[in-house]
Amino acid sequence: MRELVVLGTASQVPTRTRNHNGYLLLWDGEGLLFDPGEGTQRQMIHAGVSATQVTRICLTHVHGDHCFGLPGVLSRMVLDGVNHPVHLHYPAAGEDVVRALVSVSTPGLDLKLHPHGAAGEVADGLHIRPLKHRIETYGYRLTEPGGRTFLPHLLAAAGIAGPDVGRLRREGALAGVGLADVSVPRPGQRFAFVMDTAPCDGAEDLADGADLLVAESTFSDDDGGLAGEYRHLTAGQAGDLAGRGSVRTLVLTHFSSRYGNDVSLLARQASARANGATVIAAEDLQRIRLPNRRGGSQ
Image (cartoon, rainbow, N blue to C red; front, side, top):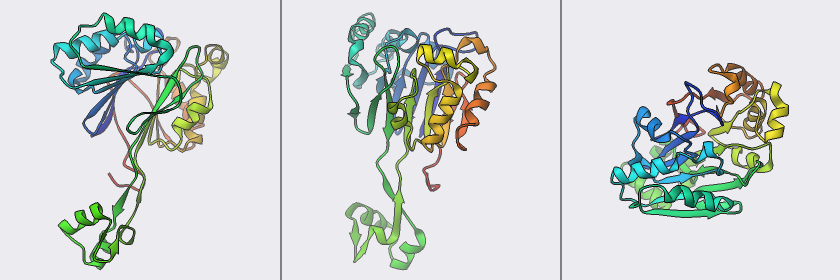
């Protein structure tokens, strides 16, 4: 199962209906927790997800609304008896803050710290790119390796069926029939996470080809001056990011409290520039499935 569980959608100031940031990506038995802000532990309870599902924690930067929930989540993992390693990725410039947050959580967790300071791959399929915020900030992209989709009519014509299909996939050829003869390329799925940034090349790289892009939409286009001052995206800029990257589903989040509960204006502004991408203005506790792979296969 590949699904995004939205734990919080507020920016710096939470509201009665929007908690601070928090996003849990469930991906083939792994749980990647992005930017756990204050209250994330409680939001996980409301969402019906367990701390034992978390295998990796990814911080974009160390502003409080993106990391102050870390001690509570780590302590809950200890309480729940998590015995698998948990990997924590974060900008190297935030080392002191991360160490302080980890130090106040309950000891007893096999926590692996992974600071980073440049673009690159930080785990299998997990890449980072620098963003443009007021402190060192990185976005994340998770990419599934590409594969191939078998075409039943070509398999039948080649006389390949049953266990021989699996053998052909493993070995690449069978009885003179190659993979390319009975299948077509299948792009791997891509998930991208872009938070707290002005428009920049790093954000563009992360969004390119994403099946599901989570992007901040702190301000409306009407408040573009504030967005520029604080180095955030407007809704329209988030839409541009999705449109230029041929994104399939854009999830808007990190909303300023100035817009209250109704962020439909931001969704409309993003949609107008998203070049046909499905636009979702996220709500706390919402679950969003990744789209089918390009080409229609699961």
